[in-house]
Length: 287
Ligand code: NAP
Image (cartoon, rainbow, N blue to C red; front, side, top):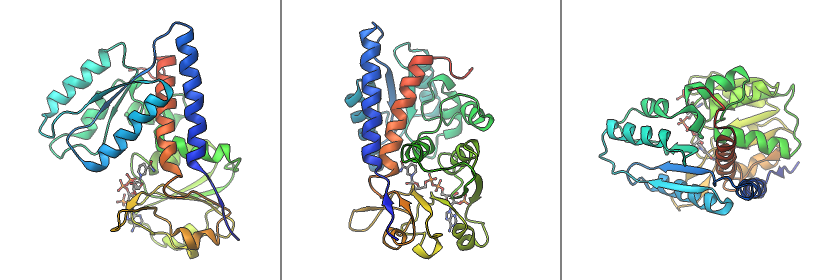
């Protein structure tokens, strides 16, 4: 078997085009462009690349970007003051604080300080709670992007056995909530999981979000499974690779996402969808 590729780059472009048209329609109706504030603390090179991609995507679809780059030495209360200012700014519909933050800043406190209606990363406890309850709200971008990939590719989720490797608050956990909502039977694995290869081999839908290059070998994959590789790992030669051993997985899976060009572009596309929704509704979640 040779797996079919799920082309995240192309699906993300289609979504960004839809957002662009919706923004243009808003403007035609006399409304302002949605505004997205992006806060990057310090000079972490990976964060710089991620933020640059997000700001470029804003430009592509007419979302107004507001970039903030406080020094790595910024005090937590100064950052909280900036968040409070952005919460109150009527031109800002979405606030994104690029993670990770420097060690002296409590990321949870910063995320909780964001108005849930502007929390376009969907990390605020209020939005995670709404996702858990199946209520409308701003959904974490990477899991939302994965659900869109599955939907656009017409891959059945209802009733499938899904296994997620990784339980982080930004990927694994909200991914589990999305899949439960879509009526999959979900197993969440992590570093303490026993018998991981057997659990993975039971998956109709296998989602890897570990952060270790080539962690999932082809022999763990059930023949005909759908494999979503969330991992982004940089090799010594500078190239990017996923958490799944792509070559051996291609021989077993029915569908697979490449890295790069799979989940990554969908995260950015979902961010723009969230920004548009935050601008349109303004009241998706009660503060
Ligand atoms: P993370 O916070 O480091 O979480 C990694 C998860 O993997 C943890 O739950 C950890 O278990 C689990 N794990 C680690 N070693 C394991 C092992 N030997 N066996 C089983 N589970 C193990 O990472 P993350 O933020 O979720 O990101 C995961 C990957 O996705 C990274 O490569 C990241 O760069 C990538 N990512 C990509 C996108 C995108 O847009 N494509 C977005 C976000 C993240 P414990 O909880 O027990 O420690």
